[in-house]
Amino acid sequence: MIEMLNVSKKYSNGITAVNDLSVRIEQGEFIYVVGPSGAGKSTFIKMIYREELPTKGTIKVGDFDLMKMKNKNIPFLRRQVGVVFQDFKLLPRLTVYENIAYAMEVIEKNPKAINKRVLEVLDLVNLKHKIRMFPNELSGGEQQRIAIARAIANTPRVLIADEPTGNLDPDTTWEIMNILEEINNQGTTVIMATHNSVIVNKVRHRVLAIENGRIVRDQQEGEYGYEA
Amino acid sequence: MKLRTIGRHIKESFKSLFRNGWMSVAAVSAVAVTLLLVGSFIAMLMNVNKLASDVENDVSVRVYIDLAASEDEQKQLGEQLEKLDKVDSVEYRTREQELKQVVGTYGDEFNLFKGDDNPLHNVYIVNTTQPEFTKKVAAEAEKMEFVSQANYGGAEADALFDTMKTVRNVGGIIIITLILTAVFLISNTIRITIFSRRTEIEIMKLVGATNWFIRWPFVIEGALIGLIGAAIPVAILSIVYVYGFDAISNYFVGTYFSLLTPSPFLYQLGGLMLGIGVVIGAIGSLLSIRRFLKI
Image (cartoon, rainbow over all chains, first blue to last red; front, side, top):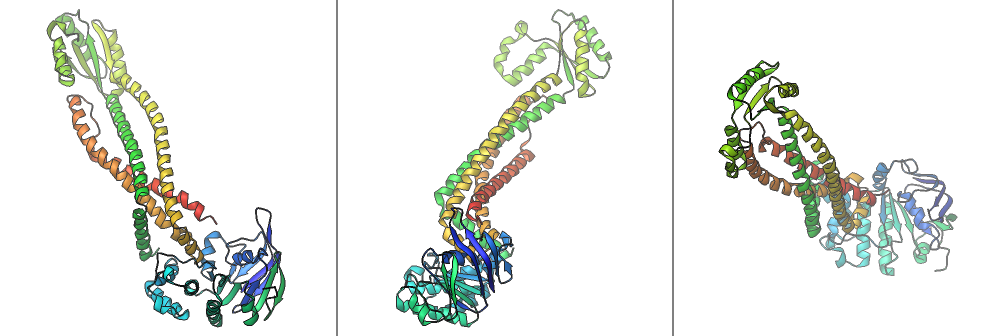
């Protein structure tokens, strides 16, 4: 599904964020990406949806060869990769329904399909009853659930979550985790960068530990491995 | 592109146009002022061009008769002129008739020169068969006895064309500068639009909207600014031209000169200006989106 081979990313300011990294991720896996701040986790994740282009190596995501693909094909890669951020990035002027529908409208899905799918994903994140509300009327956890619903609306094969629980309290964090688990159970690959040791240690999945731009540990059902 | 998508783009661009309120007004005014100047300039240039070619196509040579010539001598000169090669017709006009035309064109003040004060000459108006023979006929007429001067339109036309070339070059530079200014102003307006919607653009890119899907609403917004901005000077110029045409045409009564008639000239000019407006609007917005879509 995702294959990186000897990938390096050196920024124009001279910093090498990712250094000769290789990894293979299969369809349907759930992966934690851990490591200290500034170790290269974000760059690693951004390379998967072609927000950052590596300076060396090869990356394949699904059928896309990210090093060789043309810029105009990037949108089609992005339709296969859903992304969720720590700060949600919802549009404040739009209701819950519109926020999710928006992601489907801009790739020109037809209104009927949009309506059906929005209700489906809202059901999955348990927020059908808040459909007419605006983001600022929701709690942080609820906003993140909407962001996840939006990310999976176009049924991507991979869901990337960059510190999705970073701003949330422990109870809410577990709600988010349950949703990600459920999405993973439906066959979507989930890649989650996190600093939350409790989650990683309790809900065991494959752990990729990144330090100085390299994978220093790749462990099935691994533990967090850093001081909390 | 799907019809539904086109509808969405147009709706989005109108929404944004109104949301930016005063910024849109500023950009529209800038385009309006620019195109008013461009339009006036084009109208002027086209008419000068028309007059010059009218002059050039003039087949007549004006042969001024020496004041000292007697009636017989004048008659003889007329016969001589008629015998010249390439001459189609010869018309005799007295200085009184000449003065009447001057008064008709320039006003009653010239009645002062009536009678013995009339400084004009009796003339023969010699029409050649083709415009290009005027030069030769004028030269031959000038050599004849009792001719004080022979003028032909071609010389004036040459001078007119020279002047026009200079005017056109200088004007061209001014027009290009103005158009670039308008493009700059439009692109700044669109940049503000884009800036206020950068989260939306980020999300659109994230979920896989194509670059053209993101661009279209902004391009349409720019084109709308250009179109509205062009419509204003088109309206102003049309009104002014119709009145100006009537007023100026009075001076040309009885001559072979004429301005370009409002129809079809105003339709052509209007179409051209609206076209320029739309194009500079679209280019202005494309310029400002480029940076935001970087990749």
